[in-house]
Length: 78
Image (cartoon, rainbow, N blue to C red; front, side, top):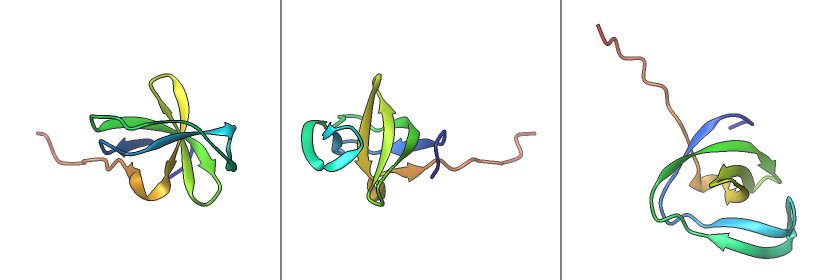
């Protein structure tokens, strides 16, 4: 996925904020686990392990393997 993509975030996925922004080696300063699945905006990559996403007005890191790319559905509606 790339910056600007819309992605699917499953419920109970751990979202992280690091002590130093975009630096996983600095340790975790805050985390949350959304109770409901939702769509999120991909803001970029943080190392080979995390995507940076926008969720509820804040930037969070999420492990790449927990985020799913949105698939467009091109069915003929007519």
